Length: 350
Ligand code: G4P
Image (cartoon, rainbow, N blue to C red; front, side, top):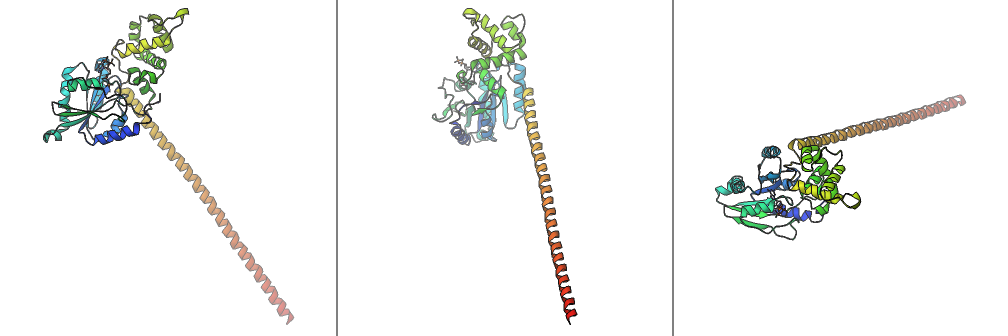
């Protein structure tokens, strides 16, 4: 699924964030623990360079804890990165964030300066909830548009942190098909931006494959249906989507299922695992290698063609030169013959 999100304003937002990046000591990046890789904004990675980042895998209360731990371990292996899993209801853990942040900017602390933190995250990931918890009061939401019209909001926290909020941006193009659907299922992409039913069909397929038992239990099924569409029809028929004449309202069915997933009624769900992404990265790496090999093969084939062509040109040139020499030789011999004939004629006359 390729989604163009903010085609017009993205460059401006990018520039503003790049500028702001020069004035901060660290980034807090709020991710969705159910889809940590898909909810990362690659722009942040590009722009932050060596600025340390604390990744908060938020909404851990909705994610499969085993996979959440795998993701935390995965991110913690990266340079300049620290990761913890968290949820908005976990006040104790949230209270630890300022100390973790301060440890990630030790020079500022040594110089008795406040740590300047930029908090980032895509829409609906729980960034405002997190800021509320850190600031200790309800703040106005910066919104989900890029930083075009609104200035960054800043909050000075009691514990030596200055927090600047950025808009909850998605990146301009979501290239990865699965990431697009996962973001849509989680609610990061506004429902109006996408065909609801298409997202629900993707979600149904995912649930049937990864969490079949939950589907059986939640929708009180004797057996699993064989297709995602069949699944939606069953949900519709059981949950208020049955219309006159036995027709199923698929939009209603989609709403029910997506709501059940988002609210945790289908249990703790992780949409993507470290292992799946590692396979994806390996495949992408292999594709790059294959493309490079193909380019090199094309190049050496071209080199061969060029070499053959210049060999032919050289042969043609040698042939021409030889012809010219032969012609010259012939002409010389002719002339000599003519000269000899002339001489003997002259001698005869005497
Ligand atoms: P944003 O600024 O990143 O766009 O997200 P925001 O904080 O507005 O949170 C988006 C939704 O996610 C909110 O629900 C919020 O309550 C919920 N949320 C945030 N953190 C957590 C968490 O750790 N666990 C769970 N389960 N939910 C979380 P909402 O229904 O859109 O709004 P509201 O009715 O809660 O106000």
